[in-house]
Image (cartoon, rainbow, N blue to C red; front, side):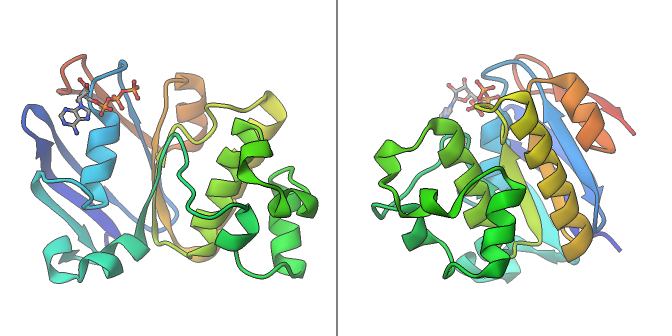
Amino acid sequence: MSLFTARALAIGAIGPLEFQLAAGQCLALSGPSGAGKTRLLRAMADLDAHQGVCLLDGRPAAGFAAPDWRRQVMYLAAESAWWADTPAEHLPALDADLNARLSELGLTPELITRSLAQLSSGQRQRLALLRLLAGRPRVLLLDEPTANLDADNVARVEQAIAAYCRGQGACAVWVGHDIAQLDRVAGARIGLDAIGNPIASAS
Ligand SMILES: Nc1ncnc2c1ncn2[C@@H]1O[C@H](COP(=O)(O)OP(=O)(O)OP(=O)(O)O)[C@@H](O)[C@H]1O
């Protein structure tokens, strides 16, 4: 049974995408800058108008209340957005579990009480991933989730996402530019050409 399905998903000339993901699977989406990868992720999260349909457990997005869909099908933006002053205000209470998850991502508990303006972009990016995972989504829509990171932290993020998907029976769509990474983290990849047409699918 497919956990997450896209049927004829398109935004104007961008797409259409067709895929099915089971629990534990990751699909990579690649293509040149401006091809439409972010717009397709946002369409999957039902954040923007689009054609075609996405389904969760075989149920179309239109059958869910919008907040319910977005709680289960979560979009991680390339540049994270925050509404309070510190990460702690966006996260569950600090306990052993959160401590372990911070450490898994190479972060220290002290960071979550700092002002967000005093954190590096790579720290904010990993904290945004932590915030996303704390919401227990079933589908992760990841927009360049390691763009600001050094090699050690890239490896930490890759491992944390794989462990989450395995442990929670979730699946992921991973947008990136590093094809070696995409081949490492995803079992299949859809490439887009410069104007957003799907050009390849590999498994
Ligand atoms: N809200 C919008 N309305 C109309 N066009 C948009 C909108 N947002 C982005 N675009 C345009 O749509 C195209 C695809 O943008 P998108 O951000 O999806 O590209 P991308 O593949 O994610 O690029 P990058 O790799 O640089 O992040 C671009 O030409 C962009 O200028």
